[in-house]
View 1 (tube, rainbow, N blue to C red):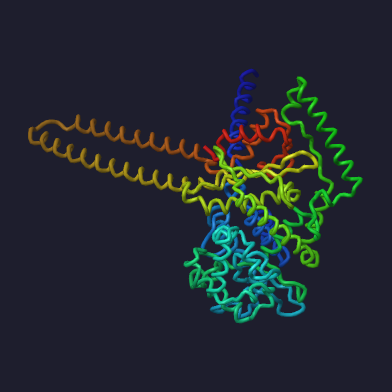
View 2: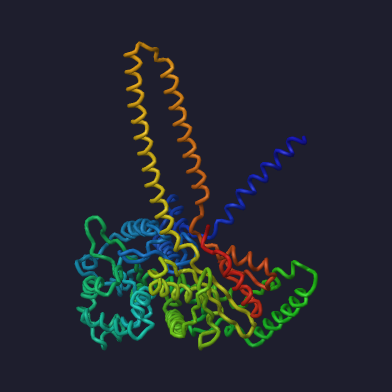
Length: 567
């Protein structure tokens, strides 16, 4: 019995060690649940257009929100339009499957959409048209519901590539519009009301000038035999009511979750005065209790002293987004919400960059939003993450080449003056190392190839020496048994060395597992526990934390001393 118990304890410790090692690898994102659900429905033969559309929206939402193979950060881009998906070609492979499913469930295709100069789809074929179609979507933002100029100005892709937060960047944008032959009066009116000939030539002109302005991939390339419709997006029509792309729907739904209403109010403003007073009183009471606990001897209170206090409007925002997913009327009514949020991101990000308020620290860059007209908006983690991604992409474009591809590691903090609490998010901390990992793998492959060549040369040389020795022995009439024994020993030595090399490679592979994943979430928790800071981890994202105003500076100082980009 004693031996069995010891054996069980050893097995338990072994499995616990494996689990702990897995959970300390860092955060990453895989295929969205919506596409997995659609795959299961396809296996059961119950798929339809509604399930297909939800799967497409889920994939689009994952890509535009910064969920990558290396955690929350910047997605790698391709020249075919859209992101490459999870820092590789996996996203494009899923989109290719979804495009095949769209053609299978919606077999009627308009030949004009697949011509030499296809335009993005803005209207349905008939009042009863509820089909999903493919469209050469540019990397513009809400282009069907904005003017072309506003859509290009608020596009995260163009903002970073052309530095549109500067006067020089805006002049460059005006120059681009002049090169492609669109006047100021045309580009500043609604895109749907633009001249049809200009809309037909837009994609061709952008492909012509993308190299000159260094905006490769702003639109999908011309379709060829081997890459037909590569990079094309998805559009769904609801008769004459609306025609929305999957990216538009994902942007509107995320804006509802972040802002909460079509009037673009801040989350706490959605509460009534009595709810707000009760909420503030409860938080203030817990704040005073936590300060008392911090002075006592209870170490558990010193670690995390902010209890979970759910925002009363959070559930309401969730159900609004859930209802909007199945209602085109709600989606249309909340498009101004998405536009308001994007304007706030552009306005606040421009202010931070112009005032040089993005400070470089040891392991990341830091930005704090504590003033301006939109400060209350960025107390919500979703809006703050969008701002951080916009700034990180801008920083990478400006300083990425100078810092060897780094720059995506960014920590943003938004100050809630009502509660004296900072919301802190960390993006990056892993994505920049993917290229380093690939380079190291190539270097290791070349090294192993050189070693194999050296072994072959050494074996050939030994074979020649053995042959010469054999000839001398035969000429002298000596026995060759000793020679055969020496040969066997040499072969055994070579096999042992090969086994050692394979063991080393296996060990390196185990150590490299998880390399490049974001460790912001792990570091946030470690620093909070080490300092005894009063924090609250109340989010699906591990890299999101709420922290008291007085604890922010020591928290960030300690965090900056820790590596957040993997081992």
